[in-house]
Structure formats: structure tokens, C-alpha cells
Length: 325
Image (tube, rainbow, N blue to C red; front, side, top):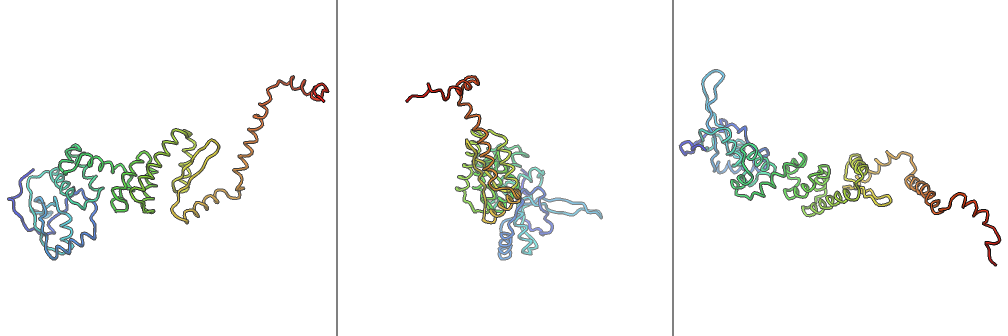
């Protein structure tokens, strides 16, 4: 890393400081920015920003000095909101783009209010772009290697869940049970929505995820019928909620998850629409008819005589010698 510019603090116009294009942080809480702006109005910027000096050529000729932000974007944004004309900065010289990126990432990671998704993405950039091992990232952050690896796993979640996590709809603790269903993204999304709309706790989500995982394993062991799996997915797509088909030796059950009474009415309307004027007892009547068809060969199989033996036995059926008084 390069040395600091004379190890001094300079006061720079806020409009001359440009955001870092490599800034790894995406989300800034507006309410907190407003709170910080109020504090800056009263006390000023207490912690200097870190910038690099950039010479930019003007269209009409000549050079103009600008400053590219390396660390402290939240303070810069709040200062602009507060209407502060100048902010204290430390100027770095000789940094490459990669050095600036590393500084920006590390500075952001050291913040307590950084959301877990941005933290995971920052870890990923250190691993992917800087070729750091998980252990090296952990040492830089003062964390365990397991913490870094588990944080990176969050990025395997669907984008909808990552957005919900960034927005605080679910907590970091909720990601653990959702990740238990990593091989079933459709189940992950359903569980995510249940957590959000049913206000499910982390422990309840874990129990639900274990149940879903167990049912999946059970189906692989006892229901290897691809047609059942296909039908289950078709039900889920049609009804817009989780559907479980539990197969038994004879028939089975269909379990449909719902969130409210309105959901039940919607599901019922969909079924009515599909059924039309069909007899509601049609399924039962079909089952009875099939059972009757099966019963006939079963009963015949109990008589193991040949046709000639049956004919001979019938002729002797009422023979007086066959009766006793």
C-alpha cells in the first residue's frame, strides 16, 4: 500500500469528491443518513474521509483536480444532505484501482451496519478478484474461516430472497433453514414467503425446513414415481403455494398450504373453475369401478379347477349320493 499524502488532513469541497466507482456497498439506509446529517450539522464530520487525488483534463483544455472517494461514502452523502461545504480528508497517492477496491471493501466490512448481503458480496470480491482464501479474508476481518464460508453461502440463494434479506424482511438467522433446501429453489421461495407473511421465527423456520427435507427424502425412498413429482409441481404452479402429495398403499392425500381464509377461497374457486359441472363424487365412483374390475379376476382365481372338472362337478352337483340323511 502507498503512503498517506504527508500524513495530513485536508479540507476539500464536497462537490469535488466523486464517488468510488468500485464502491462495494449498494444499500444506504436513508433514515440513518438523515440522522447522521443532523449530527454533522451540529458537530461536523469527526472522522476524515479517505480519497485519492485525480487530475482530469477539461474539454476546453487544462487540468482540474478532483478527488475520488476510497472510504467514507456514507459520511460524504450525509455531509451533502447537511449542506456542508467542506469535509476533512486524508489523501492517498500511488494506489492502483485494485488497491482502492481493497481499501473500500475492507472499510465497508468493518462497519457494523453493513447488511449481510453486501458483506457476502464484499467477501466474494476479495475471494474472486483478489484471490484471497477464506482463511485470509477471515484474518483481515478478525472472524473465523467458518463465518466467512457460511456468509458466502448466502449468495447461492435466489435473488428475490437476497433482496428480502437486504431490505430486512428476514434476518440473517432465517437464511440457515432456507439454505437447508438449497436443492429445491421452489421450496426455498415458498418458505421465504411463509417467513415474511406468517412472521415465522428462526426456530420455527428450522423445524419447517427439516420437515420439508425429511419429506423429500421419504418421497425418494417410498415414492420414486416421477409422475407423482411432476403432478405435485403442476399443483404448486397452478395454486401458487406449496402442495404435498402423500402416497399410500391405496390412494393418498394432497396437502395444500395456505396463508389466509382468502387463500382458501381462491384455491376453492380455482378447483371449481377446473371441475366445471363434474360430479363431485366422480373420483370415488371411478375408484369403486376400478375395484370392481379388479375383484372379478381375483374371485375367479379362487377356483383352480379346469373347465372339464367344473362341468363334471356341476353334473354331479345334485347327485343323491352326494347327500347324507
